Each structure stands twice: as C-alpha cells, then as structure tokens.
Length: 584
Image: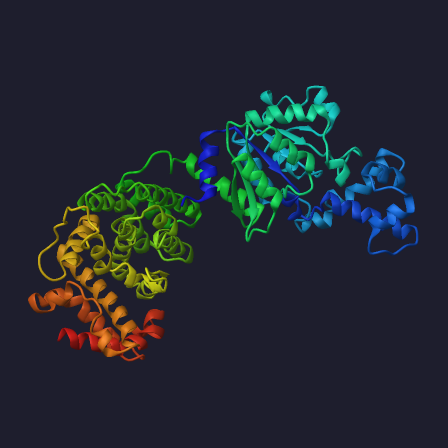
C-alpha cells in the first residue's frame, strides 16, 4: 500500500497552492506553547492564589466566587486595566525569554519551518489555525515571507481575507493572543460570526485540507463548519498520532467528508517528511517512471549518500506502489503463463533495485528499507482478500520469491551472511495460520507448485525445464537475465546462485533438524544437488563456504560478522547432515 505521506506529497506537488493547512495547538505544544485552555487555567490559579485560595479546581472556584463561567475577555479585564497590561499578562505564555530562546523553547519548530519552506515554494498559501501564538509568522519571516494575518471579524469585513492575491494568508480563527477578543473557552467556541461561515464555505470550495495538531474535540463551531460545507474539489487528510487514540469526533468528521486519516509520529516528523518528499519530487524522482537502467543508477547514487536517504525511500515507495497496483489487477481469466510473465516483468525493476541496494551499501536505514519492501508484499492480507483463486494468491508470493533470490545472490557476493540470515527469517502467516519464515514460504517448490498445481490453472500449462529442479533452473535463467550486466560472467553467477540455494537448504535443514533427522531429509534442495555430480566446478563457492564453517573460532574469518560468531554454531550439525545427504 502506498505511504500516505507520499500520497499527500504527490498531490501537493501536482496541485501547488490548492491545499490549505488547518493547524491546531498540537503543533505548538512541542515548542513549549501552552494550549488556550491551559493558559486560562493558569490565570485562574493565579487569581485564586492572589485571593488567598489554594484550590485544585480553579474553574469551579471562579464560578462560586464570581457567579459566572470564566470568559476569556472578562477574565483579562478582572486582572488588567489596559491593553498594554493584558499583553504583559499573556506574553509569558507565548513569547520566549532569552533563556527559553537559548534552549529552543517557544521558537518555531521543525514543523513550522518545514511549512514555511513549502509556503516559500508556493505549495501552500492558505493556513487556518486555532492557535494564538506567532510561531508560524516567525518561521515565515525567517524564509522572507510576510504573511497576511487575519484574526478578527473586523479584519474580514474590511477585506483583509482576500487570499486570492496573497502569497500566504494566516487566518487565526480563534484570534491572536495580543487581542483580548480571542475565543478560548467552550462557550466561545460553539459558534462563529456569520461572516466566518461565508468564508469557510468559500475556503472549502477552493482548497483541499490537511489537518494537523487539531483534535476536533473542542472547536465545535469549526467542526460544524467543516461538516456543513462538505462540498470539495480536493481531498481532506487528517493527521493523527500513532498509536491513535479513540476520537469519535475526528472519526465522524473524516467519515462524513470522505477524508483519510494519516498516522504520524509527531507534527514535526510529518511536515519534515512531507517537505523532503516534495523536494525529492521537484528534483524529478517521481514525475515519470524511470527505466531500469536509470533506477539502478539512482539507487547506487542515493545509497552511498546519507543526505539523499529520503529520495531513496521515495524512489522505492513509488516502485512498490506500482507493483502493488499491478498485483491487484491480476485477472482469473488470464492463462497461467500470461500471469507469470506479466508478474515477472512487473517485478523486474524492483528486484534489481533491491539487489543493487544490498550490494551498494550497508547501513541500518538502507537495510530497514529492504526489509520494509519485503514486508509490504510478504503475506499481504489486503491483496489476498482481493483474490479468491488460489493460483492468483500464489502469484502474490512470486514478487517476494524474486526479491529473495535477487537480494540473496547480491548479498552473498558482498559476504553479507548475517544480513541475509536475518532477512530470510522474516515471518508471515502460512495457509494454516501459523508463522513461517521467508525461506519456507517463498521457496520455488512452494510458490511455483501452488501457481501450477492441478486444478489451480485455467487450463494452460507452464513449461519449465525438464527433470529434477525444473523451476530452480527456470529461476536461475530468469535472474541471470535480471543481473547479467552486473555479473557478466555466467559461470561466476551460477556459482553464487548455487551458494544461495545451498544456504536456503541449510536453513531449512536446520529448521527440520531441530525436530527429527527424518524431517531434515525432506528439506528442499536446489540446482546444486544435481551439479554436485554433473559439474563439480559449480560447487566452488559452496566448498569455500563449508571450509569457513568448519574453521575454528580462532580464525580471523570467524570474526567477520555475527553470522560467524553467533549463528554458525547452530548450523554446523545440519550442514554436515546436508553434505552427507548430497554425498559431497
């Protein structure tokens, strides 16, 4: 499934200036700015203490003492006489002291700066916010953008909210902290002036909406306005922290407006990622599908440059989405041969990208990207539900089989046994519900056997190589076609291919060996099981691997990776069993 942030980035990139932002207090809280409710509660506490009362519920104390619910404007009037005094009362909540500024408190966050960067590039020109602070304005000023700020009903009547001709308009629908007329308490948030409704209607017709930092719980009038003016030309995306808390108001709003929830870790992380992906799109990574040659070149370039990690992720995300979309279009009426060839062609580019990525560089971030790609397609419940026919469900495992072989042979050429060992132990639910590792689920015997099983085909048989391990030979030819430019020498390629299949058989033997040796005898083999007798030269790399496995821990080679220091011991006996089975 396509990453939602990428989906938004593509939409924003292709529709500059057509999406508005709705920003709530959640975006400013990470900067140390209190919410409006927190400010009122703090002022009420101060007022109670000044009256000689120390109470855990200053709101209730206020009601009893003054005979009314707290109102923001009247509350300020009680504690200050002039506008200047009121500004002094509120300034400590919204403006940073020199000490706070030095600590990065009450200053624009990564989210504010990312928004400002996107505004500068013309992607956003309308920002609606419930916040009273001026962090957005400051971030925009740092980018050289002077926004038109509208925060009162009077300003709208005077025509200040004419966003058509403005580079950026910030509409502070609940007011600015410097104006005592701000809306802060529940009663003040239940209804807006009539002029607001007119502009809301126009706003929602002109713009799509990305909501972040707003819970939809307190601003009743805003929630009603969104529902009332639901006619829209562009989409609505509602960012929600993960793990998501139950929020009936937000869920109802998204459902009624046909919007989409966006799971995020934080507002800072979301907007920074959005900016990075839009910038990557600007640089041409995703405008048109790349050829295999260009895609591989970009993988090699991005994999060795930590500054281009977001572009590397975006490149893979788009290719994953293209493959995911293809797999959802497989038709039961198509012959098995056709489905097989189409799937191979659809997987070719991503298989090569994964192989070249594991060969080009090793880092936690890049290895995570490889595992993420596998997990996207490994046992996808959404795709399995989409296809009822077993043959097509089996084809859903075909990409992972090709990925495993492509990554496997390239990883072994780089001597990355530890990474490959961990990757092949990724698990997914099997047909009976139990978890099984990747090397079992996506073995040629399993995948090809299910694709071409009697009764699963539409009547068209698929010709493979004749004799034992026919599909393994077929796969070896196919992967040679994928990676011929890299290996050049076919004999060398086939030896690495044999080593990979031997490694997979070893893992399978080890798994069954833990149960009984009889079960270990049934572990699937590969082409190497034939060539051990017909062409011993093809066993050269397997022989080298066996020698390394048999060496003592004192050998320098044993310190090469976790595979040799930790996992080698558990595989020694299964390996000797496998070798006896091969008579090698």
